[in-house]
Amino acid sequence: MKNLFWILIFFFTIFAQAQNKEIEQTIETFFEGFHQRDSIKIKSVCAEKMILQSISEGKKGTKFEDEKPSDFYKSIATISNDMRFEEKILSYNIQVDGAMAHAWTPYEFYINGMFSHSGVNAFTLFKEKDVWKIIYLIDTRRK
Image (cartoon, rainbow, N blue to C red):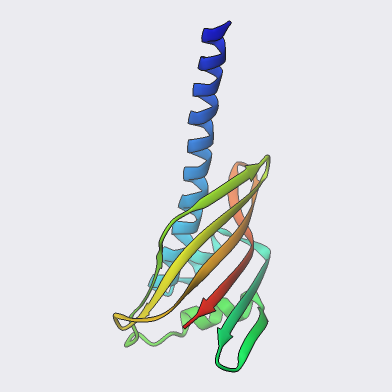
């Protein structure tokens, strides 16, 4: 009986790690598209009705904004090729309950190699037909 318990724990751990890796890969694909200015690649991992929001903290206080996915995709595709930017994900904290997952990803953002701001992304994902899709993304931005 004791051995069966450890075998079940082992398989549950392997399954959870594989599922977390799928979620990380979805987020990595999102950022690959972001850095490549490839809105089609970004769309491939996002739900059609995705919700995008940001919380910015600055000298004038805190600001909460909504963004339409169509506006977001357009803004990514029209970033000047002269601008280099990188969002470095520092870690992943993933929680899963069935077909829903949440990923908390602290980050640092760089423009032309210089630090711009930092914050955290909070992704909510939905597993549809064995594929994880981003349904909600909110981020914080601090200078």
